[in-house]
Length: 223
Image 1 (cartoon, rainbow, N blue to C red):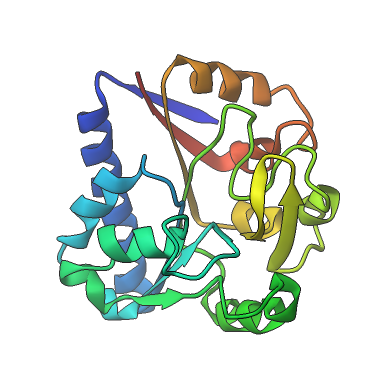
Image 2: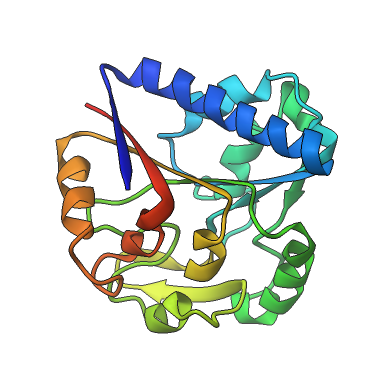
């Protein structure tokens, strides 16, 4: 785990956006395609704003969320809605969004089809993750109903997840898919999360799911 501490959040967002753009650009030049996986929530919003204006071959970039609540895009709780509003605009509007939601009452009814659409775009080129104070990442929550399965080396690409801390069912990329990314960045702010990520390094993934990706991750932190 490599932790970079920034003097302020604005500088962190600029530096992280520059690094993501450079890594995507290198992959596009070498392979002609790239996959970017991003979190929901408001914290990465400034990074998305900056990336949306970057001059990349976005038409050959696939974007997939780390996880999604099982709600339609019209919901204010939709991560997809946030990514469309903040990232997939300007130049980045040309990117392809890989869905983690499809109309159905339960995620289990659509998860195989959603995973099949993601499979050709793996491994992830650049992975950006957030982390909760409980050390969850994506929808890998401590105490979630299928956490052990999602952490297993043979986990499928996507899994439905339910947890006491998550009001709706979730769909999440699993630990092996996340850990297999070429470049892994974890974006956190505040003293509580810095303490949590330090503690996670000495805990098993079942207690601290972020632990599953820390080995090759760069942690970006600002107060």
